[in-house]
Image (cartoon, rainbow, N blue to C red):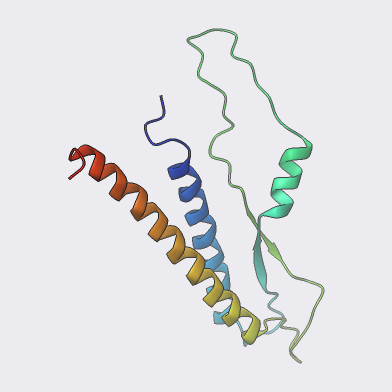
Length: 131
C-alpha cells in the first residue's frame, strides 16, 4: 500500500531533475572563461522516448524473490553541447542563455517545493483531524 500515492514520488523526481539542472547551469556559468569548455545540458525527453520504445519487463518466479525494479532509474541525463562555439577560445557557453535557464529553473524548483509543501500540509491536516 502506498500511503502518499505517486504524487510525492513524482515531485521528488522532479526536484531531483531541477537540482541536477541547477548544478549543470552553475557549472556552465563557472566555466564561462575556460578554453574549449563545452556547455552541458540536462535532458528529459530523449530518455523518456528511449524508455517508452524499449520497455523492460521482469517476472518474479517466487514470492520470496526480491522484486525487480532496475534500481533507482533517473528520468534525465546530462549531455554536452558540442555543435556550437560562441567564444574565440572554443568555449560555447552563452551567459545570457544560461542566466535565463537558471531563472526559469529556479521558478520551476520553487513551484515544486510549494506543491510538495501543500501535499504535506494536507496530510498534516488529516492527521490532526481536520483542524
